[in-house]
Image (cartoon, rainbow, N blue to C red; front, side, top):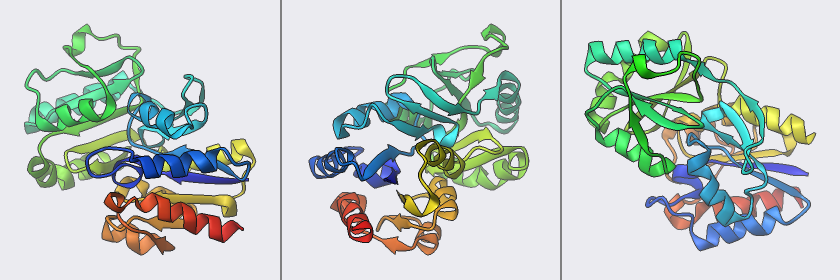
Length: 268
């Protein structure tokens, strides 16, 4: 058996955020075959992954979500999770207030923010993940709450201007990745898509040389570094293309269909 890990945004989804019929059919056909297990590996929480998993016929399987903080299937069963604490949320909130930024926190109950002014990055996150946003002061929250991810969200220019400062402040204690131009995402230090995918492969009893990964962005790099059989999309970042073993067309050219065909040829 082989495990195929597919990123969603910029990879399985086209630039409009749609899982095209060709890509969905290609995934579904292989998922019905005993040779394959297919997992979406996304920065999104399950609320943003499940609709596409249903379309592709893989909702019952486990998926790597929230950049590796959670491994969960469509029925809500969790194989693994590494969650942030309320203290982490409070620390990021204080930093954002001091620097004119805003943040949100995400868990199974949805997304929350202490900032009443909603920016384009926050709106994009809620749209992509099918989440309603609750504006709630920190002192109104349960200090026992835990979160799969925290995010600084804003327009792309502001994120770009502040990225270096944010990473310098937090990268020693947290995993900081940028999966979208409007967001910097935070998880526990040991959390990554690569580590979570390794745990999923171990659960299935699948060796490293039977794992194939397909992605396009910086939050996919840990998978490419962990598993050598990697395919970068034509629209991937230069760093990810350099790390990849193979390349395929862009997400707007249904590149995942070609990537799956490449994998077929490799294992048959």
